[in-house]
Image 1 (cartoon, rainbow, N blue to C red):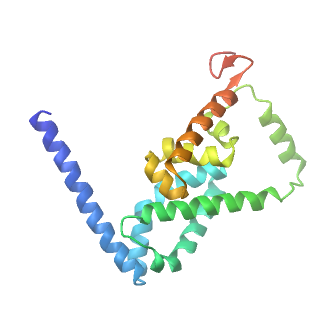
Image 2: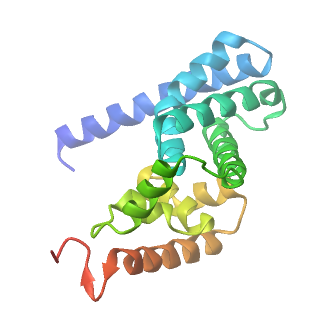
Image 3: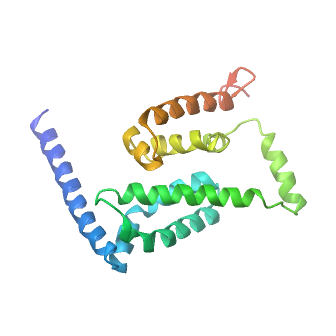
Length: 196
């Protein structure tokens, strides 16, 4: 590495270290019931949480509801959180479970408005499917690992910790999920975006 690259690398490591120390202090305070500290921790995670919720819920209002419910569910039990570096993992796990629970509840709701039904039918017949739509068609176990890996940029060990499953399972679900995505994005032998 050249000198400038080393300085940038060391500066970035120093920033991460300072951020980690600050987050550790906030977490200790939040565990003791400090609402301001809890809010600051959530503030650090809010964009990541919203993006993940949006990928599950596919609309802004539902995504915001899931984030809000996640924060509510996390406030009291934060006192029982073990370890100081696991807040992000812990809150992400709560969000995933909340999103899946909300999706299951919403599946039991039957739309009455004919316009909604017609729009759904029209959406299924579109010639091109975007990536977010394709991901939403995956089984939950594949959707979750793909979102965590490629949208949240998490490593396999971190995903394994969030989902509380072996790393081998995460790797195989990633592999199978990508295969399923390719199938969804391929229509009649023509890959998405290549045909008319």
